[in-house]
Amino acid sequence: MYPIEKNGKHNDNQIPDVYIEEGKLQLDFYIKGNSRYEFIFKNGKFELTYFSYVNWGSINITETEFNLITGEYTKQSEIQETSEITLKIKKEVYIRPLPQLNNFKPFENELY
Image 1 (cartoon, rainbow, N blue to C red):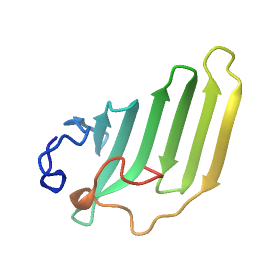
Image 2: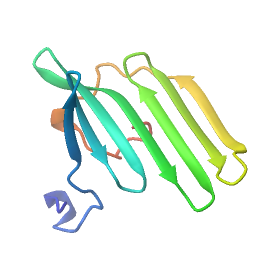
Image 3: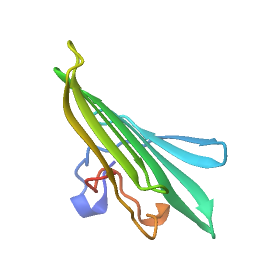
């Protein structure tokens, strides 16, 4: 995409795959790995409720999941060849109010 705030330069984002499944709006991006954002429509707004991200590097696989409703955040990296876990983070993070689709920008937050 070529946003105005970047003076027409490409921002490495693409148009996501968009799905509506089980009442959730899902946006799938394939930039620097695979990521999924899930929104629900509540009180006239789309609110971000779930985020997942998987990145396959040359050595490590990193997986992140964040359930914004329960606050459960996990991130884990492991070496592909040995499955040895090199990073494991599990914590509770509460974001209120939930982020909304109308001011959402993917990959601009360290958690999602």
